[in-house]
Image (cartoon, rainbow, N blue to C red; front, side, top):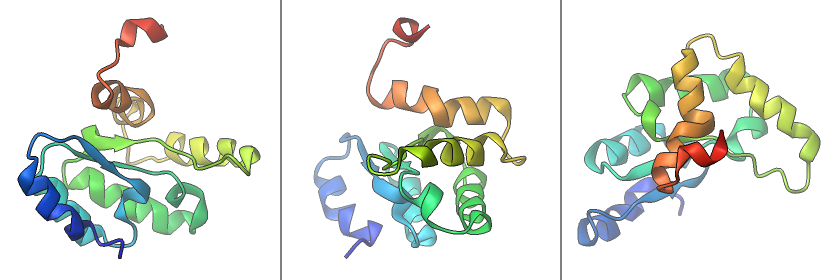
Length: 125
């Protein structure tokens, strides 16, 4: 029941509604890319996904989202309330992604959340 396409009716009724899809809609990358392509206010997070699966699988999934042009709508997340020591692992996965530029990493870690939540970035300096 986690198919991203299940959000289409709601998004059609509320075209300016901002939503984020947890775990980037994993494992349904094609559906997630199609949904994001059709809806400018759909974001994804990497929580859970980022430490639950083999790193090559995560990198392939993230790289597809970025290559599809959605780097400005990917949010860093952890789901690490129970396993806080995995925080370093999840941060390292993004920091060590050679296919991401510094600016893309900054977007994932900070800029995209500031935009999504309409925050004042200067309050975090």
